[in-house]
Image (cartoon, rainbow, N blue to C red):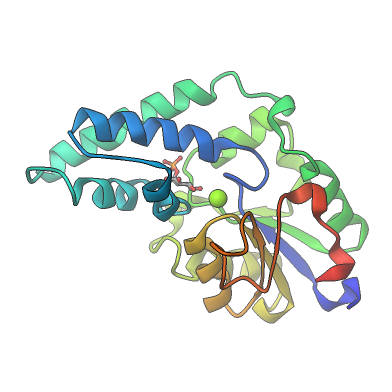
Length: 215
Ligand code: BG6
Ligand code: MG
């Protein structure tokens, strides 16, 4: 397959371009422990790609008591404060191997490059990584009504890039993210374990294996 198959590549951020998925995990783990909820890597897999309040709801579903909306907001704020502290020293050294090369390869092939992250910290993370200028369009998560696995965020990226969804390759590390790409009508490149990302069209271990001409 040639690179002309696509007109745009739309990347997820956390767990694809940088290992912030680890920091989300650590921050949710501490929050869960504070509420007496068991939390492990397997459970965390269901949270990847899920927005902040959606993730909190999934965690609190196994809490011993119910929470008011105000309590939930306070817990979400406290998780985010911890997360922001964890990422505060991030720099270009935190780019995952192959990330910059993959972004540059898409651009060199004449494709539009988009970012579709449901993280409200995405703009700050891109700045810390020094790669904000490498994207033609970055979706503002604050303006998305329905998070992944809904297709809204990938469809928004495609529409702002002026490209039809069928001409887009989406790149994701989360089960919910791959589902979002597929229901948007795009081709999905998974990053991680093929057994986990079974809905993806192709799965690679990381962007250091990214080869546009192969997909
Ligand atoms: C996604 C992560 O990219 O962003 C999730 O995979 C996270 O783990 C979500 O919950 C929302 O991030 P934030 O920074 O808005 O809390
Ligand atoms: Mg991700």
